[in-house]
Length: 330
Ligand code: GYE
Image (cartoon, rainbow, N blue to C red; front, side, top):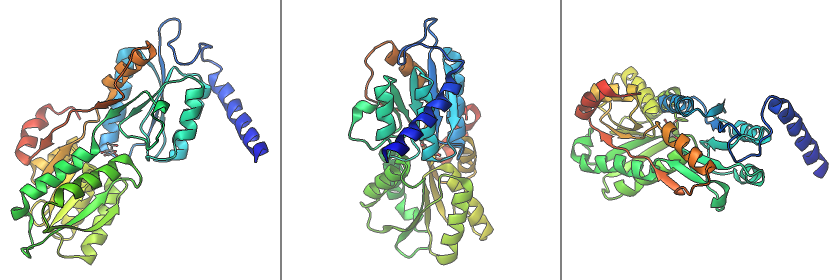
């Protein structure tokens, strides 16, 4: 066992040596002599419109702030993110930031970063770890509140949402990536709020992995087994857009025959909302780049930062989407 670990460790450091050949020798955790900060960022992947906008925000703001950004796309796999973080540690970047694909399983690699004295900033998604000293701060949305807002809309619009007129509101839920903070929390917030109205029931719930295709496939199978669906609650716009395709293919009108509530408010979602195909969107802002760069600079300058920084967000009805669309950045 020990032998295996040693072999693995030396394999990693060999890779690291070749990676760091053109890097500097500065101590980790502080900017280089010329003041340039190197940030290693381990992104989840490119699963959704939200993620694309988030990646662009991070890349553009790093450039604007003069931060040297090393960026990896983990293609939705935790092991790839862990590998990327390990390589950033070996390269002695000044600061590591990442958006954890799932909540659990991060302690070991974050302990390695801490031992190397490299500060870590969580962006977008949380980790489920008891040791909060493993990261400096967590910048992102409150996903429970997002789920609550989605549920509240349904409670407020219950009379209009019983499309089948059977006195019950049958909701199917398209969940985000299993084990991801936004999937867990958006389900929880929605369930809490809708419990106020006993006529609302989640009759089926399955993951569509935050992708358009995933949402479409799950919705197709829901439609095949149930013709009493009143409402789709999708944990992101992309899955809602996939559900629209499935609903239209089944000869039904999205937004009318089946109500749709989503989270994110990216461009394609907002267009569908303005067309009445989606009924309500809870905003989740992907524009975390400027705040992230600012936090990195503060942390490296030794300034205290708040342990939790929340993103400000709103909600959109179709009318509000029409108004917002012309000036929407993403
Ligand atoms: O809602 C979804 C994306 O973590 C908040 O991930 C993010 C979520 C976002 O794939 O579209």
